[in-house]
Image 1 (cartoon, helix red, strand yellow):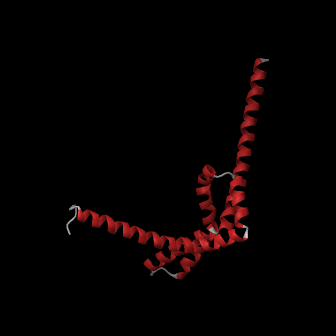
Image 2 (cartoon, rainbow, N blue to C red):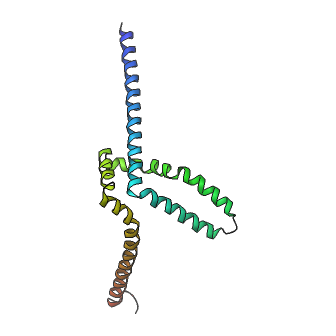
Image 3 (cartoon, rainbow, N blue to C red):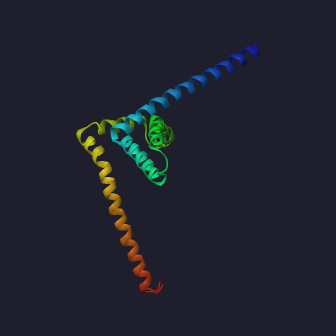
Length: 156
C-alpha cells in the first residue's frame, strides 16, 4: 500500500513538472512573439537590419576581392534568422525588466500616431544625439586637459 502511494506521488510529481514546464514554454513563446511584435512596431527590427547591412558593407569594402554573388547569398541567409536569433538572445533581458503586459502597452503606444512618429524619428534622433554626445565628450576632454595643464600636471 505504501509503495503504491509513493508511486502515485512520484507520478503526480512528474506530471506536475511536465505541466509546469509545458506551461512555462507556452508562456515563453507568447512573450517571445509579443517581444517580436514590439520590436517590429517600435522600428527596432528595421534598425537592427540596417545595422547588419552596414556591417556587411564595411566587410565588403575590406574584402573587395570576394564576389558579389557570395554577399548576396550571405545576406539572404543572414536575413532569414538574424532577428529571430537576436530575439532569443535578448529575451531573458526583457523578461528580467518588463512583463508581457508592459510589452503590450508599448505595442499599443507604438501603434498610436505619436508612437509611429517616435518610431520613425528614433534613428534620426539617435544619430544626431550621438553626434552631439561626441561633441560634448570632446568639450569635456578639452576642459580636463586645460585644467591639468593649468595645475601643472601636463606640460603646456
